[in-house]
Length: 491
Length: 100
Ligand SMILES: [Zn+2]
Image 1 (tube, rainbow over the protein chains, first blue to last red):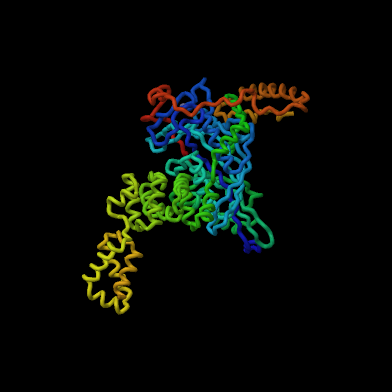
Image 2: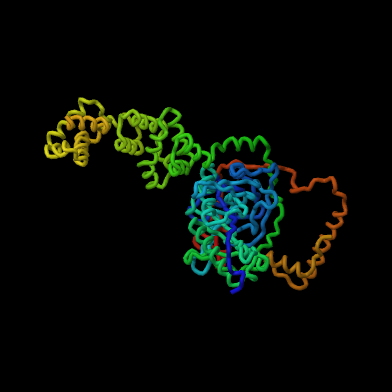
């Protein structure tokens, strides 16, 4: 044991590359459909199959989507951007080069604020975001060969590269999840993990303070993680692996001696694994693609995209906490996507009480959305319907339980909440004359309970209240009925 | 001066490009590529003090297409020229290691 292994502090230093598949209708350089999950080689053409003589034409929407993400991340979007060829050989890459951006990316030097569990936020710097094409898919489970499906070849892929500003597994996950929320929010990607719309490549090393010195372990890049779980496990595993490797060899296991390394990830063991690579694997020989003219993003184009961005998730969540007085969890749940908050804001704009709307949205509606694996907004509730129902609650025309029933009916069949409540007999009764009938019946039918209640038994009072509610089929205004019941018992 | 092209570099480029080269070819290409680069060295002698760097050889910009689908090839057409296919996949020798 050497002196240096007395570690006083270990700081993980993590940067993250995120690949996001853009939700354009068509591919990046041809007009084949950009769609996951279809039969192999059904969305292909001479361009994405790299037939000789075919020429790529850039998809305007892919460029616009990328600029949108860049601007939302506070990046500089330079006026002049171009595409380069990254040369390597793999069966899923028909041209033997990938069209990517080398020295003049579409967006650079931004900052992304991510929420931490403490409720604070942390600013993670974004180095660059560039637009490139995805490769096809190799299918490995065929007998004695590999199969290639080129449906994905040429699909636009935005690669967002962070600075190494994350210092814990929590921060890495927070950044990745926030990015998923952002690209969905902006409408540029479905960011569906099962469909491979997002892939992660973290690079990780440790700054270890021991014996008055700081040691840096080799930077490890883990390739191709396609779930949040894999990302979490890979980073956590690297932190513990690098700690023990360094302890075993404090002078040798360092960045200065070993440089950068690539590792793969094994889903079964949830560990990273050493990858043997050919020496020339990273000799990509980038050069400008002569087939693709550069793109000039002028002020007018940039401004029109910027004007389209609107309020971003963190800002909206804060506004909900400030203006609507929502708890963090509520505000967070309502800002998972843009449309649900838009619905809330629209209902409030026509006069509904924010808190009533929020309770409605986060009750049965949220549960149904979860069952259907969609957003609350996808349930199709109109702002007018939500406002009407919320106002019925405010005016005590319906109780909370019945309002949930009405909301479910609205989700399932549509219609006006007031009419549904009327038809289903769910309107709340506050009228003393009608309440008195139920209260009197409950008293007459339960002489024992009444006697105990008169002696001050609170539990029995609750029982009698339950009888009143039952007789009214939930329609009695509980406050009014309770008052009346007490009055009669107190006599 | 640009980096001289020696035979090792020609072999390296050959490997990167998946081209098998005989010793004779390596010698020939080293000479030819060397001559080409020598010519570029001549260009380096020009005074480019006041010339902005050129990022792209084509002056055109913003050749962009609308994001509207058009029919491509049928699967049958797509596979027609492939040396081999397995069901509707292009068939290639077994790829080992990570696939994406
Ligand atoms: Zn195509």
